[in-house]
Amino acid sequence: MAALFRRIDRYSLLLLATVLLATVLPCRGQVASGLGIVTFAAIALLFFLHGAKLSRDAIIAGMTNWRLHLLVLAITFVAFPLLGLAFHAGTVAVLAPTLAAGLLFLTLLPSTVQSSIAFTSMARGNVPAAVCSASASNLLGILLTPLLVAGLMGGTAHVSLGEVRTIAGQLLLPFVLGHLSRPWTAGLVDRHKAVLSLVDRGSVLLVVYTAFSAAVVEGLWTRVPAWQLLLVLLFSALLLAIVMIGTSILAKRLGFDRADSIAILFCGSKKSLASGVPMAGVLFPAAQVGAIILPLMIFHQLQLLVCASVAQRYAGNQPTERTVQEAALAS
Image 1: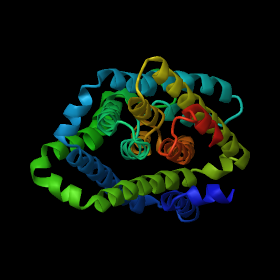
Image 2: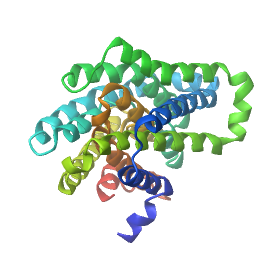
Image 3: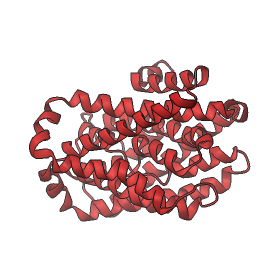
């Protein structure tokens, strides 16, 4: 337990503190409207900076490994959603409808960018491929996630061309503009990486606070007992274990080398909190967003803890003595 506590970083504690703040002091009325505008701008700035950070050389170097990218996309947008449907069918009888919907929603999201690359680098995997694959997943998810939500969660979410445009305007357009601005901004972004991290984490905290505030005002915690959160934790852990073990086995069976297998594992097994929270705010009624993103927040913390442990095992002196399946189970 002490070792687990040491692995929980400050950001995880800040997320918990944000939920607590929204529970005790939720924003309402004009304050909530004002924070909504600020949050929209912060998310747009985040994706602008991600676009400015992604170099053209990394894109070209990564695009050559098309088999790796197709596999990551298949895991992210085919295998994950299929597992999500199976889990939804098995949990809808024991979980509150919004929590069961949230568990399905997280499986429809794109991969993370920064943590996928960081863990691939830590484990001595194929970093250029991870940069390209994670970025492609994140960008394609701007369009694919709303389509998957419309097809698999049509009764819960409200997806129209207007919602897709809103998501594209908040996420895709700033990313493209950021990438086009690289001749002027690349050096600045590289020199001030801490600013990107601050915007990344700060924007997500803002979205979480506004989403949970709206949910608390509507009586979230009177509808979600603690034992249901424990079930979400257990289901999330099982989902992550299945995906990580399955991804490792599949990459090996398809003949990928160790470096590529590492990139596939870390890009294919994670889901993006930075993309998922603002998407949920657009796709679902405000009163439901807080409960919808609860499974995503829980899964996000699990994937960081487990992937950090697996990456450290890969980076060890004898990385081939333990398979990733064993490492994932041991974590």
